[in-house]
Length: 158
Image 1 (cartoon, rainbow, N blue to C red):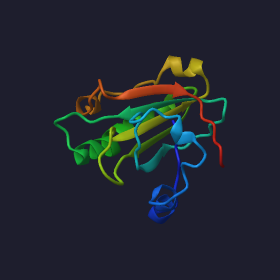
Image 2: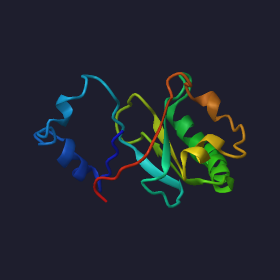
Image 3: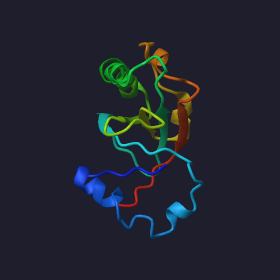
């Protein structure tokens, strides 16, 4: 997974717009055509904690259910689910940080948003969040299309 932050649309267009030089290093030549997903999101830090390169990170690529509008998903996620998960993050030993990013800045893509949780270690992650209540979020997403990956974060430019 690659995450990039941009100051504004002009900064984004300078990187991804017509005539840019972004592909000159050969990176895009090694990708399988059509592989992966690109999301233009608004990032919301829900619980800000200190994570390091030794931390383990779990990323959830969230896809809404067919019967759910993006507005309904984002409202529920922001107003009910995020506070619920944030409370669990704050009471769980070894859970460090929680961020959600809604794909609300452009055309619809493969996923509707991303949730990220940082852990102090793989052992802490395996112990899981303490006390997440059923807030109905699971009924709004397509569980088969939602993808979860775990790994570590390696910032290239700080």
